Image 1 (cartoon, one colour):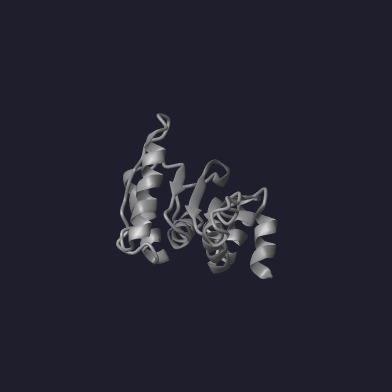
Image 2 (cartoon, rainbow, N blue to C red; image 1 turned 90 degrees about the vertical axis):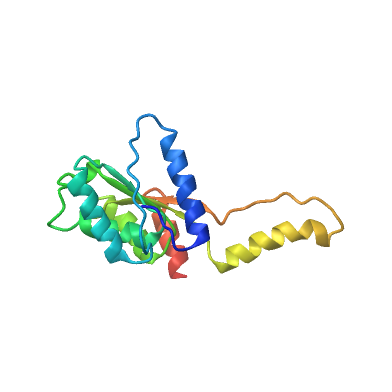
Length: 166
């Protein structure tokens, strides 16, 4: 699911599609959302794609709302997906609802298997400061450590949920 209403979402979507197309085992079905921040739009897109392409096994969404919307269709009684253990949704962005769905996917109560956390405002400020420190210290090079962008899967979702709740 490609986003199109914000420049950073367009760049993110383009990069995701390009990376997926590099894998010869992947058939990419692209669809651009008129509003990637509307879960109902993503749900309709998912349903329409399944009508045209019934063998979909993975959805990669450009943001949390698109992924959550796709998941709402996959988890509905209208979904053609009968074995959730063979289906996955991945996305970018993190919030408590996404983390809870990843945790639920361990027992196939959700199809959301993972996301990429882009960090929050404090992470962004910290990353900017790390880049500015060499200038402020008269050019002294300080190792740059960017820890705000990281994957969240079933393996570390409890840690992410604890971070969200604190």
